[in-house]
Image (cartoon, rainbow, N blue to C red; front, side, top):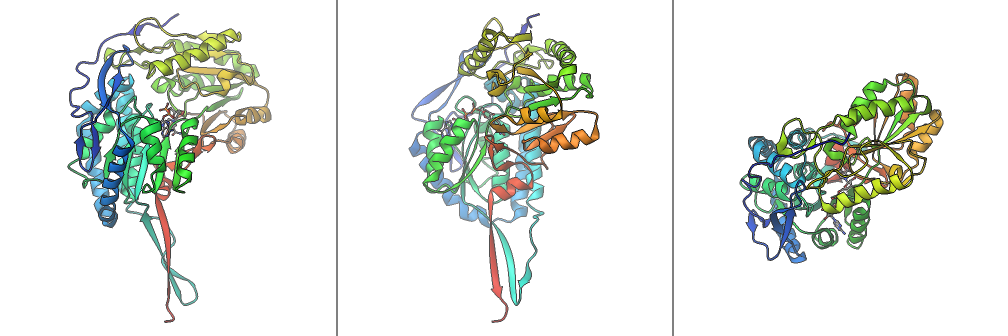
Length: 491
Ligand code: NAD
């Protein structure tokens, strides 16, 4: 059965947005040229943002550089208190932030609200963690010499974020970068800049000017200038593998640090002894959260041969019940549209080619009629090994199911991918849960669950999914440098 798209406009989505310009040195500056922002539910232009230039980036970097020495001298406690105040400010503005995020991305209100809760928790975690550093104590490690370890900020950090979690991905970077005493120039995705601009506005009276700057615009102009800029000490990108390569190349001449959170294609390995209804129910969320536009999505199921058909049936039943609609259509909406026309064409292209290859859609399999970029939640069954849809990141509401025989084949097939971001294993066997989790080449592995995150634990990639860690103490390490000062006590 084809799902119905529940329709209802979000009332006045832009109430509360003050400026489409860039935010530099503590205030908004008007843009010379503008880019249209399109409502993914209708395909119509509903806002505009500044189309930044490389000169705009240079101005923002200069402001961030000027602010850096003073900000670097603040104490962890002072920065911590400010991060807590930013978190409080976000909570106070939950309504406007979730409305803007839903309008810009099309994501259901429940997803936008969850993003905001996670963003608030990230600020609070980093605010606490920066006050309790863990490293070697000052000590006489060499005879008559006292070693002291300093943790220093890097200076100006450039950040480039994607469109799938605009506010949350910005905060995953901003919180540890500011906590460790750096200043920031951030470029949001040109598709979804509104909540990042709002965040800059909301923190404008809290942070010293120049500490947080936002320049909107396209990747090849604004992002590329940030990556190559000689006064930017580090560039952190969350985005596709192609953008990661471009950023790493642009950063090479200045030898700046590079931090890359790239794509994923998470395998979900389901053994015959697994609790199949629990797996199907978890996949309903983990495979389709944020319309599957999620780097860790449970999108590639590998099911043991003997239970594959049963799992496909259970999954089709779960997925067939997902509620599709516009964010304004109600709290029960679980799936929104895809973010843009270009992405919609990409995802439906994968579905068309899978169909042409004779791959069966157990449920869904095509775009939904009417305005906007809605695609039916889809389960592709009996997918042959190596098929395009099981190999490449589709980044939409599409889960593929392949079959395997035995533990060894399961691990080998799950690891046969360029990505290494996330994976899960489903089994009631304790020995197998440890062995398979250890064998999977992904930096996050869940056992009998998928897509549960905690601010205390690192998130990032192996292999083609990039390097560097978000969240946890590891992010604080990544965005700072250690200096060893050794005093000769014999003189
Ligand atoms: P994208 O790579 O198209 O864009 C990401 C950002 O990079 C945008 O701001 C874009 O303008 C910018 N960009 C593009 N070309 C650039 C260039 N040459 N130089 C500098 N910046 C450039 O990615 P997207 O479509 O916005 O996001 C989806 C991708 O992000 C998926 O691959 C997804 O897996 C990945 N992602 C990864 C994580 C993670 O934690 N690993 C989280 C979210 C999204």
